[in-house]
Amino acid sequence: MRKIKTVFFCQNCGYQSPKWLGRCPACGEWNQFAEEEMRKVDEGDPFQIGFNESPMPIEAIELDDNERIKIGIAEMDRVLGGGIVKGSSVLVGGDPGIGKSTLLLQVLQNLAHAGHTVLYISGEESARQIKLRGNRIGASSNNLMIYVEISLEAIMHQIEYLKPDVVVVDSIQTIYSSKLSSAPGSVGQVRESSERLILLSKKTGVPIFLIGHVTKDGAIAGPKVLEHMVDAVLYFQGDSGHTFRIIRGVKNRYGPTNEIGVFEMRDHGLFEVTNPSALFLSERPKGAAGSVVVPSMEGTRPILVEIQSLVSETNFGVPRRTTIGVDHNRVSLLAAVLDKICGLHLVNHDIFINVAGGVRLNEPAVDLGIVSSLVSGFLGRPIDAGTIVCGEVGLTGEVRGIGHIETRIKEAAKMGFNRCILPRIVSSDVFSETDISLIRISNLKELIDELF
Ligand code: TYD
Ligand code: MG
Image 1 (cartoon, rainbow, N blue to C red):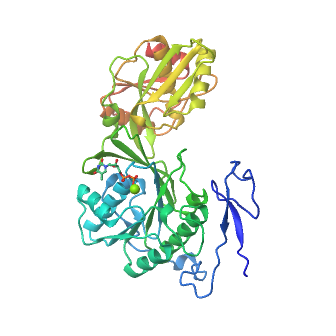
Image 2 (cartoon, protein in one colour; image 1 turned 120 degrees about the vertical axis):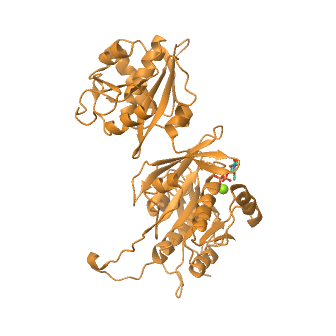
Image 3 (cartoon, rainbow, N blue to C red; image 1 turned 90 degrees about the horizontal axis):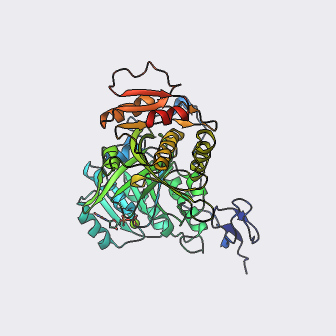
């Protein structure tokens, strides 16, 4: 009898080992190894791995005039860097029920209306269920093909046969290759299916969107290598309690990363939000202590968001530091700076910080916002509602320069703000036309003097 060759895969990161291990040497996770069969490549395989091309000078490579396909949904086009690149593979991850299937069906619907032939492959829902969803979002076109299938070989065959302009696979975890004996959703299957779909997309030039499930800590389920294999990774985020959703690019080989697109989930599908600042500031309380607005750059676009904080004396034990939307360590660091440099005794206070609307801020330019919000919450004194603050804060309490200052100020002016507190270092000649009064500071003491 032929011996079946097996290897052990870490279900978390995809690390391979010939024997079982308790702890993965690559990612450090415990108890993640599962035994899976090795792929056997047989002769005459119609989908042999490899491009079968010969080396050529870069000068000889020809480019199409229209290398990108415009979707016509501006928020989505921007996140992709100006449309879908031919032959590219895009991984879209997100929590269950957030609207991944809805979003991509709408993308395909838009493309179908523009005359492209598109194929939606689902391994999760029946054709009737997709039709029901399609009715809700008004999808009806003969160019939009629905194909319910989980067999990788059948899917690849259909893509080669139909030659659609764009393909969506919902979801990669349901696809099953008969070449492997492991179950759909296992690391081996996910890797095999995505590898071959990505190759097919590169060979034929058909762009493919792969929908991926996420694990409970938010990463795309399956091997980490999946994110390295694809050309772009987008995360569809949002709070199931809120109606708006954000699509965020975390990797993009053909465009800027960290671009976001904002949508609102309504009864008839997702609608674009063209002015996210207005949305995020719409419920802002006026004259409340602890609330401040910061202009944060999301990719190439400035967005005004509100940071709120609640500072109260610790009654028992170690003070709590709870943050939503900003980095926990950053807040601890800034609280320590305020304590040491400005003499605000935050050490025996609980700190709760929240970014309104469920936005996540991760650029250093919001430091000054966090600090202002903490000081305002601690003193119980509100910050003037027409003021925005931006700047990075260093460990000695100095305020450091940041980028894109002009764009940020323009957005603030558009939203009706009249005062901006910013770092002194920023060169002064760039912005002259706005009627916002600019207050330049170089340390936190000056900030507190300006604010209160
Ligand atoms: P879905 O696209 O199925 O999510 P995913 O594929 O990420 O699991 O979205 C399902 C949710 O969206 C569900 O809670 C219902 C809601 N929804 C609307 O509110 N309006 C709509 O028009 C549609 C189609 C869905
Ligand atoms: Mg779905």
